[in-house]
Image (cartoon, rainbow over all chains, first blue to last red; front, side):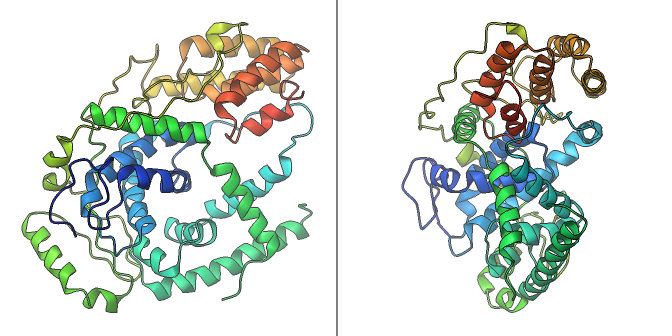
Length: 184
Length: 250
């Protein structure tokens, strides 16, 4: 851990292995964005909440231990900022979910296949408890290692592996079922 | 451990593609982070980072962390030490010592914001109803925590009741569209645009509007709105619907 604070986290060279804020942002903005979505932050709010995440990162970067996984450390912040957002936004925001989906547009959707596949995965994720969902997201979508996931979720590594295995089986079964029911 | 099948992998890739932000969004958000930092915004107060061991053995093997934990606890900082399957979210205790990092707060950002993406002005037709404009520095608009009031002027109607009204209006517009009454849908969408210019359903409104224009055979108008939408929100999940509409068809 560094003993002195860098004068400006955004611009000074890395101190004691700590990356500059701009570098963290450039490398991990998309990860933060997607993680917020998968923690239930609506698209209409995700940009604001992502800004909040990086403001917290800026504040906390001096405490980052370079021996830890940066995505895992970031995810801890993402999760807490998302939780705080949900708590402060409360019922009003949750009512957004009550709005029916927009009507279908005219003609065939060129991205229908892509959208349908994504929607299928979203539904699958929606059926999982948050801890299980995040194991699946961090491993299968974000490509984090078992150790990183264990760190990000404060979870035993063997538990991560066990869940990963079960989740893969469950996902494959869900796909098989969907195809069997006529989904193409 | 058995790997996922190619079919499963392809489905995950589809979600990953759709959920990733556009480059313009990334640039805009960075400008906003810099701007908010310059304004002294430290971001929301969140609980301190729990020390998360990868394994129980690893935790025991890191005496430095024990020392850090002891010091933090002595300072009144709540540290959630979790093991195995204990839920992650720590108690909602706000350690002032961690949040009020005066050293960081006093540091002004010296980096200039990246150049804003060039966005063409919205179409001339019905100018008051175009999607939300791109702002040089985006301030908080949604997460309006009581302790951090928004810096921008409020929308004409605001608050939880406004959300209900907005939702009702959008539902009516969609119902009209679904019933084949595109003219009424546009009237309702116009009303929505006036009452909620920066509402929660701005993008949905635009998509419905384009769909309604297509239903009325107003292809040119639909195309103008679709172009404006895709320039700003080309990577949004709703962009696929816009592209599939008559407005998105070349």
